[in-house]
Length: 306
Image 1 (cartoon, rainbow, N blue to C red):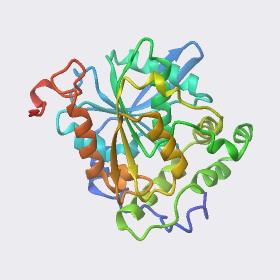
Image 2: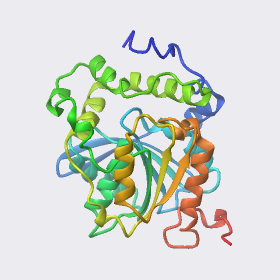
Image 3: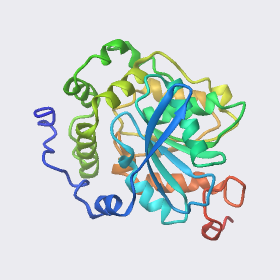
C-alpha cells in the first residue's frame, strides 16, 4: 500500500483517527462479530450496536464501498446519546447484491428486529434500496435515508469488467477505490474526512474490496415503484465530485416524494465532514416515527413532537 497515499499525505494517522471522539467510540463500543447462516452458507457481519437494546426498530447504518462500520462513528455516538438504537454494520464478503440481501435478512432475524430504518451512503445506500425492493412483499424496512447514493450502477459498470476484480491483488483494488476519491480539499473538515477514509481503505481486506467493487460495477438498477410507499430522505452534497449530476438526477426522479436535504460543504463523506448537519437531518427524518410502532427511540427518550 505504500505510495498510494502519498498525494493525500496522511501517513501516519490523520486528525479524525486520533480524535478523542473516535478513540472513545473504539474504547466504549464492542465490535460484535455475528455469524449468520442462509441458503448460500455462512457469513460474518461486523456490528456496532448501541443505544437501548429493547428497541426493535433501530436505525441501521450500512457501510459504503470504502471503509468499515467505523465510518459512521459520529452518527453512532451522537444519535445513541439521544435514546435512539443505532447499529452500524459491515457485511460479509458477498459477490452479488442478492447474496448480500439474503445475509442481511438473516442478520435482522438474529437480532429479532421489527421493521428497520436504513441509512446508507454510496454503495451502502444502493444496497439499502435493493433490500427494501427485494422484501417489499413482506416488508422489513420502515424508511430509508440515502446519502450521496445512487439507484443505478450503469455509470460504474462502464469501466473495469467485474470479473477482473476477482483476480486483482489488494494494492490494485485499493488504488481502484482511491482513484474515485477527490483531490485534497482546501476545506479542513473535508480534508480530514478524506484522510480518514483513505486510512479505512488501507485497512480493508482484499476480498471485501473486490466483492464490493463487483457489486457496484455489475449492471443493475433499483425498481423504485416498490419503494415509493416508504418515507425517504435524500442527503446530497453540493460539492460532491464523487457522484455525477446524472446519478443525482436519476435518484431524485426515482423518489419524487422524498425529502431532500442539501449539504453545502460536506464533500463526498458528509457523515464525517459535516456530521452535525447530517445528524440533524437524520433526527428530522426519524421524528415522523415518534410515538408509532416503528419508533427507533427508547420510550422515555422520545422527543416531544409539536
